[in-house]
Length: 138
Length: 137
Image (tube, rainbow over all chains, first blue to last red):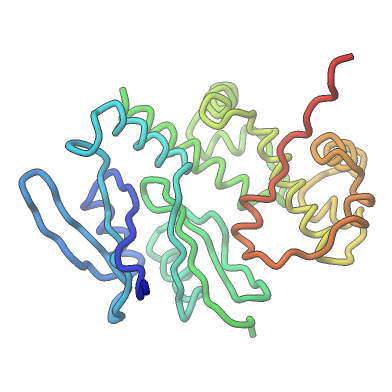
């Protein structure tokens, strides 16, 4: 029996910029950060929880030749790849604090649905991130 | 070269996101092009190359998708729906809707019911493609 989604991954164009966004702005915590030669195993995760590690992968050698890496970077920046859906206990609060911090890359302001309140934004590279507060809106 | 492409893509995506976010407001190409820091003509050309359709068409499909949602899930009149999603005239709305969906807003409403799918998936995946052109005679 499979018991957990342990690691998922998204492509980012720059590790440090990704950390600044996912940890510095969204409030995730850094998980692993291990350098092996030119490879950097870098993950972030929901703080405090025994959560899924989100591996931040930069396209490139040795997994991709330069042409493939360039294609992946182009797909990321045109928003054509998949993203993340995160849960929060205060979507509107996070929205306000992001906005107050000068963040503008929202794809959707907080909106109420029958299943909760959600908002959409982009990471610095173009990946979609949705943040959901589950439960009937007040 | 690649970095320039990526940077341009990112700006075009930001402009596309602005259309998705502000579809209900009056938007023109100049305003959306400004989000990408491009002239309107250059913006339209680049947008089409990167996303495969003109910005105008993209916005029309966003608005029509939102109108399909409101027709399915609410009891608002067709006229209200038309203005809710940013069309400036009922004639343009009806014509555009029919061209993209292949039926009138009223016919669409009578044949469809609410869908229990998360909103973000709905918005992304039920956006209508342009209806296939009638087969050539």
